[in-house]
View 1 (cartoon, rainbow, N blue to C red):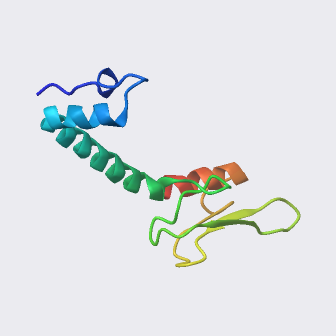
View 2: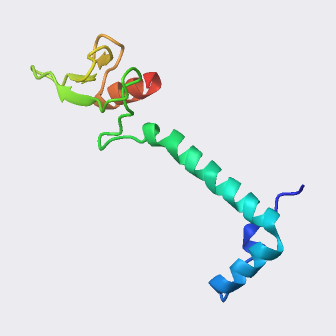
Length: 112
């Protein structure tokens, strides 16, 4: 069966009663839309863990907790990204090849 374009079914002035009648006349359309809705929910649930925090960091690849980025201080900017929950994952300037804060974030996100 060819996938219908939903926009072709409903105009701007479509009423709920008209939609109900359409579904009664074509139950396969209702089943198709319900399947699409379920698939969209599934995709949304899969994407939720991939959302970045305010610093642009993805969740920890091990425990899915929100990582933190902090300055190690000293005479120059030294940055570390770590998971405060499991403390197994970290990226640190000078150790992992990162030379800037942005490098640390990018390297963390490659692991996530």
